[in-house]
Length: 346
Image 1 (cartoon, rainbow, N blue to C red):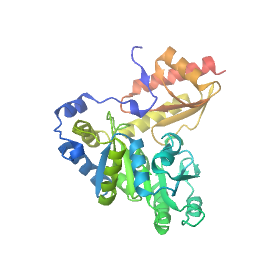
Image 2: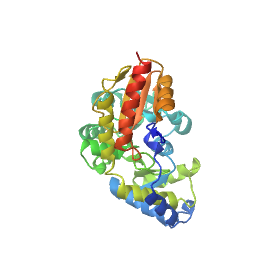
Image 3: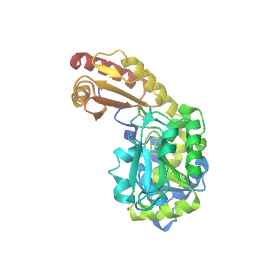
Image 4: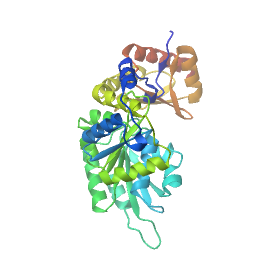
């Protein structure tokens, strides 16, 4: 075995030869001056796909969420988000530090929010308490194993938020995975949010970037916050060209990632030393618990079998399929995990 099987994340994808070609040939300008033509093309394309008026190219999904939270709220507001949301756990306390808002957490079942619970949390600002300034949803839900929120739940939450006068931001880092799994168009999910972000640098295979979509007024304000956070880029059309290529060529390939994740889960379902979450992962993530420290399991898997995995808790492993993983590598991963479980887990 000479090549590693990198299942740590779908962020590890590398641009293909065809994508590198469009990057090299991209027409560029200065995006801070708003005159990069390829940036314009990407933003226009993204807005159309999501059914929104406008869009903004940003360096990362974390920055995109930061911008959305800050634009939608004022300091001292309360935002509602899942207790395991990326913005709650993995974005370095950005709601508190950048937007200066209070977070109120709700709990989901397998990544799906409880509509009645969220309805009960909506509140108006008073002399004594903050008002609800934003409802933030994540689809797919990373820590829930790549689970997707069905369209009917989105619609119910959208109505509750509208009735309460509360905007909705959708962290759709892997939105196209969710849309494919749910059997709907991405724009249908996006229609249940005032703003939405999706990542180009995960399953779509780009080296850098996310796109934030919303109304023209929202994006006008978002551009200023992006500048404030240091996200103004210059000849970024090269990166935008990769994004355009991905939207044209890589969305449909996500279904193959889902198929391979299911094959991986089925292949290790009865492996010794591990406890698998499910043999039917909803999208492109496979989670399992180990009987020993996850870092020891991951180290053995890497050193002995050249398989890279992600550790999320003391005894929890995450595997993510993506554009750079093929069927042969999935079979290698199954063998390596089964052997590692037999060696260390009994």
